[in-house]
View 1 (tube, rainbow over the protein chains, first blue to last red):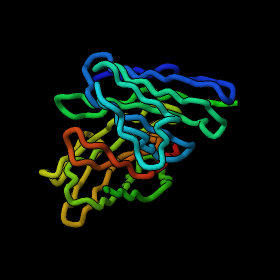
View 2: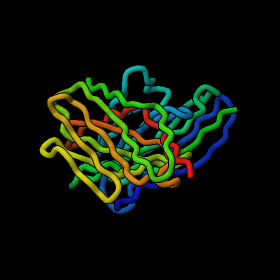
View 3: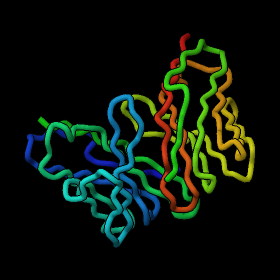
View 4: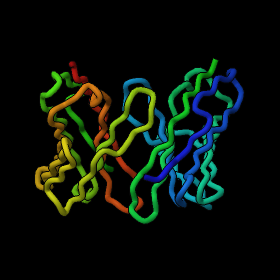
Amino acid sequence: GAVVSQHPSRVICKSGTSVKIECRSLDFQATTMFWYRQFPKQSLMLMATSNEGSKATYEQGVEKDKFLINHASLTLSTLTVTSAHPEDSSFYICSAMEGVTGELFFGEGSRLTVL
Amino acid sequence: GENVEQHPSTLSVQEGDSAVIKCTYSDSASNYFPWYKQELGKRPQLIIDIRSNVGEKKDQRIAVTLNKTAKHFSLHITETQPEDSAVYFCAASMGGYSTLTFGKGTMLLVSP
């Protein structure tokens, strides 16, 4: 199946710093990518829908200035957690939709720990 | 918007038994229902999906059934094995490029 690569897999940062997470579709072009947040033992919570060449669509309650999303190419979307705080610590997962079948492929996830 | 309810939240079975996880959805326009398996700390993996034009789909030990009238769909795993232990998520969407709405997940534990 198609491959989605997410980087970094783990990141530890100090409170107040910004962290960028990359999501790449390696063998297909993805006009639409999604970013999720997952707390321990909980479901995937959709944060935003990222469309190539346009502004991301954020879900209700998600601060767009806090979680900056850029989808500059058909194979790359980035999520930047700005001025991170300990409550932002979580598992962040991206997914990319394969254009022909509409099937969703997930990245490996990025575990963010804010000290 | 769409709302997906998933039950049970945890399920413990003995190896060799069958496991059934049920989901209901609210939006009658939804027509695509995938199931994902997520092992601890790893990415969700699609294990089976069904579209609204069929009522049942089977892939070896895994099957999914869909009742459009009642707006519910179920995952059936037969002859469970310890490696089936994971969290399973159901989801629903209107297909195409529509977003998926996920259920809260079911933690399946298969004991040897």
